[in-house]
Length: 379
Image (cartoon, rainbow, N blue to C red; front, side, top):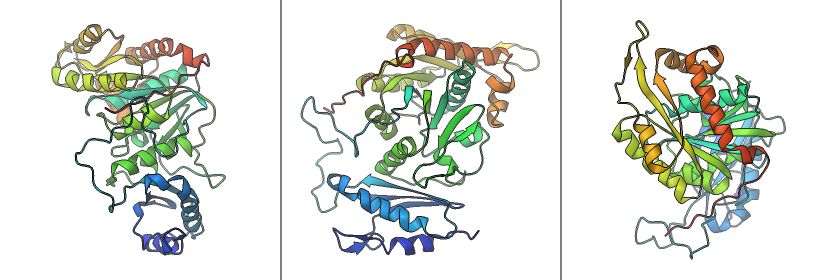
């Protein structure tokens, strides 16, 4: 099968005319973020937010033009909101203020992941706290409890799930419209990392990230799931707001290490979810203590108990503490979560206990009682 080239893709797109402008999409300069991995192609089409619904036929025409090229296996084209440069720029960097009680709505405001009974965001205020390790083992632990589980890697800039779950290759599309999620360890997984090389930087602006995240939720054949675990990027940015606006989150789990600097950032993430009316299910203290693999001596190199104290101070549940141990690190790097590869170990049991606590906190959602998406008012 012939490899598809950037020149061939742009050539195909140059034949797609925007009827409103009378020019092709390449000449208009609205094709952005072109990514090619094997026969899988992804790109964004920049449009004015006011014309987003009208541009859906143009998006489909672009996908069809590229899909017709030899060597193309799948095409993912997303609309990304773009404010016309001819319009006056806002006076400050702050978002425009909608009228009180009228939340901003993203492009295409339909609720996503409607076939999932409980969507759980695993978040942290900063990077480097082991959030992806926790999210992966939590998802696998929920699967071991008998639930149908999906795992969405929402970190567009730094996707971890291909490595964390030893998944290689690209998702396939049986109908030409939706991608099949990858699967391993009994769970369904989707990540932008399946569509780009591991060392390829994603140099995308915020709207493109939001559109890609929405498409991984909307245009993936997740099927009926009991639980979706979302590995959030660190911080409080576009991905977090997209999830809060577009998905009826059952709750968020905050991951932190014990030291003060991590807890400060964790508090920011926690407060963000509270502001957008998403329940915080509790806090997990990762790297809570170090166990020497040779002698078993315990050292609290990052301090200990800071997350538990923070949870008590804020009136939140403390979900558990996970030690810093070489077995957890090795199994994570190898794509073999410790919950499945060492299921009888005390470390696997820690994740199982955390999963059981999470289940009790989203019991209403798992019983089929829907939660409405929050109303977000920017003041």
